[in-house]
Length: 150
Ligand code: ZN
Image 1 (cartoon, rainbow, N blue to C red):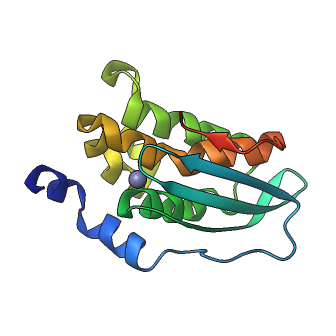
Image 2: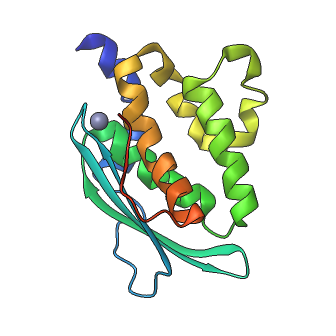
């Protein structure tokens, strides 16, 4: 477990213990569900999108610390952004944890999300970290089917 412990940095622990935007939005006009069968992570995402801007975002679910912290920080980082900006952050985050290192671009643009860079060393954990983001994309695309990382 010592390798994993390095992953659980202060920020990740903080977000997993006290997830931000951990609420079911009553006024949501986009929702999506995501599941990571490998770890048992489950998330339901609620978005209120108006004029192409993510006005409100919330999530519910259960899972490991990485999946919860990732969902918490994802909601923080896309709130108030346009759906196009949210898509760009998705791409950058995906490159950070699962892409080729050379293509990762400027990690500074991700802000606090760079704490997940260590996840790429642990393939099993990549799906935990990326789950909320795939669910976000499904919600923005209006997909009705629950998404799965498998
Ligand atoms: Zn997990």
